Amino acid sequence: MKMYFDGVKVGDKVWDFQYGWGEVISFWENNGMMLVNFNKHEAWYNLNGVRESNTNRILFWNEIKFEVPQKPKVELKEGTFSINFQSDNIINYSNNNLAKNGLTRNDKKTAEKALKQIKRFARLSALRDQECPDSIGYEYTKNKNNYYIYQIEDSKEFGVDYNDFQIEYKIYFKTKEDAELICDILNSGKFDLEGE
Image (cartoon, rainbow, N blue to C red; front, side):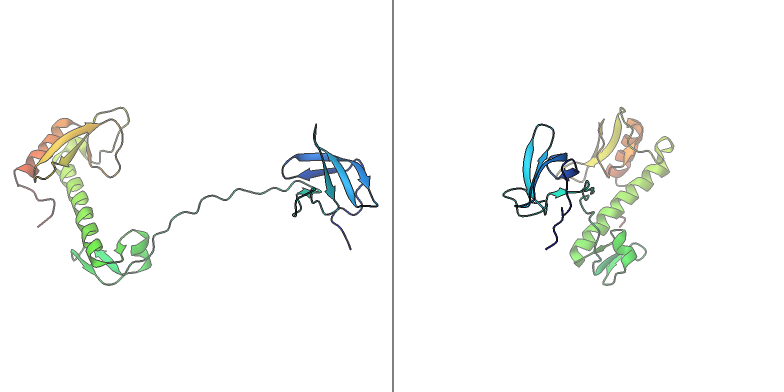
């Protein structure tokens, strides 16, 4: 029966998964074993490259190179309820383009909540860009006071705060005055984020 290391000789270079490169220093043809030296370490292998108590080949003629696979990315799956901005409702229909953009959900109630959140975000951003020329398109800037508006818990009132660390999906304002202006507009009832 043909063995992986048929024809091996003393002095041949071989490679082990654990020890790396080594050199065959002894070969016993009658029992099909070889001794390999790995820079201060020695190990016995059979002619199939299996080390002593192992069952799989771990010794090879050349280095085995492989890439560690990256963790797979999560892809959005198509839902059956689509968020429809033009008609401002949820429809029981979807296509792959909407799913890739995150515009589908698996149930109507979740789709309605998502539509409400997206509308609030878009309307607040549009109001900021319309009423605050200095803050048009403003995004979080590192090492600055980045102002934003928040809704006071258990209330319909809004307040202003700032941070020097980024919170994703916040509408930021360049100045405190701009944030306070929009806060005043919202608190006075002159503009409804719900768009109703």
